[in-house]
Image (tube, rainbow, N blue to C red):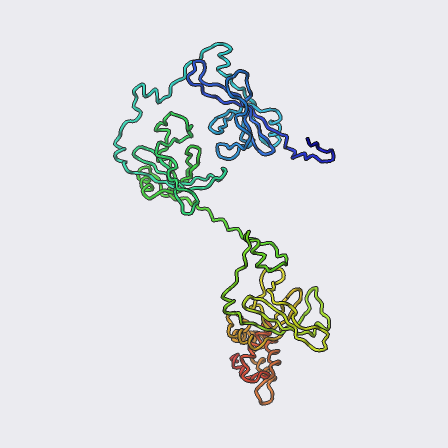
Length: 540
């Protein structure tokens, strides 16, 4: 046998682990065909374990009782009448408690339980006495009890009394049925749900039936009949009762109102609507107003689908590969955009760029003179940076950044071709690159697809420049400054001077938009711009 060593600590458990609440009660058990007793009082003890909110019901054993006594219900979470597990606040002294078809009456509680519940704001009534058992009284006094009374239905049958007499209303209302729409919300119970139902009231005999409304894709087997046709008592009636309810104890049309909660054998049904025939019949026969027949809106807003939150990328592998490991148990290769792979595989945008200073990154004199070529591959939105070899520079040229997808700092968005333009500053791997120029293919591709690259739209840039001229220096001042840039009688001006004038007049224009205006105005000479063409384009 393994012995516990003294140096091994013992887990004390939660502070409420050894605490058990205890109630005393009883239930009456019918004893048929016995001349000495009609029922027997059986005493029980309820134990409520605070460690896991479980209960058990124990009957103290009696010597030579002839009854299988002891544990009546094993320890578990006992469901109450509403379907929810029983709690200490449900155990009130003097009230009955129905568990699995057996009704117990709680009579007393011990001192610890009363003190524990009072500290938590649950007040209990004074203890009651458990009634004496008739069999114990017979044993003590040898007194014979009287015979039980017969039920009212049996008495009427033996007396020859007709409880129901025929009437012409049965023939007049034959085939007339009132239809009500209701819902039963049972979500408080374990595995409960909110289900729609139809209640039919037959006017010919006053009987009712409840049918379940089948919904598409509800995940439930079709089970249309919830309550078969028959008299529906107003109050809760024991299931095992053999007494048939009278006409005054059953539900009538005036009890079925929109907005009323109808209790059907312990289940609460909310009536929210009825059909056209029912509305007309209630208005003509019972005088219901139109306001009383307005349907209730019982539709609940659909819950928002839970958004999938992926963990932060740890830097190993690509973001798409890491996301596949989080989406499914069996990782699959990430899906590619085959349209871009097939149609844009040969398209590469190239820009000349240089290093610029960024927060936390300073440049040396040699870094300021370095020039790079940034290539953007449209097939997969990847970037590559190449440094041309410069003799006697002391820097080894070649691949500076291998082809890969680059994310914007602090986000999961990839730097794409639409983010590239002349003058833009791109943060790539803790270095900042400023785009200085582009090749002719890049300029033409962006101008031909100006719907995707607004910075290459020269017409849009001219509109911004014209609006800036009118709100800024004015047309005459701009013409005067433009004429000052014109060379003698050639009618041309330097492209760099025109670019400086455009960006100074309209600061909202970036360098790529200014170059787009110059490219539209240049006819054959790339270094000079016709002044009259710029004035005509601006409609000055």
